[in-house]
Amino acid sequence: MRKQKRLAVINDFSGFGRCSLMVSVPIISAMKIQCCAVPTAILSNHTGYEDFFFDDYTDRMRPYYKKWEKLGLDFDGIYTGFLGSVHQVKIVEDFIERFRGENTAVIVDPVMGDNGKQYATIDDALCSELKKLLPLSTIITPNLTEACILSGIPYRSTGFSLNELLAVSERLREMGAENIVITGISDGNDICDFIRRKNGSYSLLRQPVSGSPHAGTGDVFASIIAADAVHGTDLEVSVKKAAGFVGKAITLSDELGIPAEDGVCFEEILGELI
Image (cartoon, helix red, strand yellow):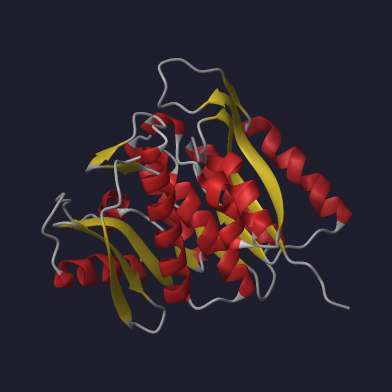
């Protein structure tokens, strides 16, 4: 009998703003995988808005997933997104240790910053602690800023050469990362994604800039990568799919006049992932 695959997603729940679990649950479900959420925090809307309700879920995370352990649940994939504290990183390490099977894909999206700066909620101690997740991962999906923070190589907004990307990815490999996808690399009128595989081979994929930046696009991208990893899809095929989907959603969101902080209207094209 065919078994439906399961993917555990550890991320915050923001009720409005199209990010984190509100993105992952529908996308992963559309890709025919059971999405099992572990909330790190509950927010009325993401922190890019002027005001928001916030409930930290750190102290509830272990009791929450220990019930899963008692039920004997297992997962074909584990995907981690935004983590708000050093303590949460330690909890994620414990979760992976408890639930990782022999063939479980582990996707780490090290959410730390963008445009050369750390997010206001991210400090140096948390950035350092997040490095401990790299050896536990199957795939990591940092943007260029995050890849530079992790590797210690200085960030530039434009003009990153292929040799420099290879140097960044090699540093990440030395830190334990297997397969690396660096996103959001600006090169003239193109946006590039750089892939460095476990075997050392690499690819640089380009697509035209599709529109204005929107919140949550990294969550959309990483959710598709995570679901494809569980299905065993070739990484380059998966990155092309994710980048194309995000680009189309951005274009459509601009056409509909959706504010950047509201995220992209991926719902309009969700059927393309089924």
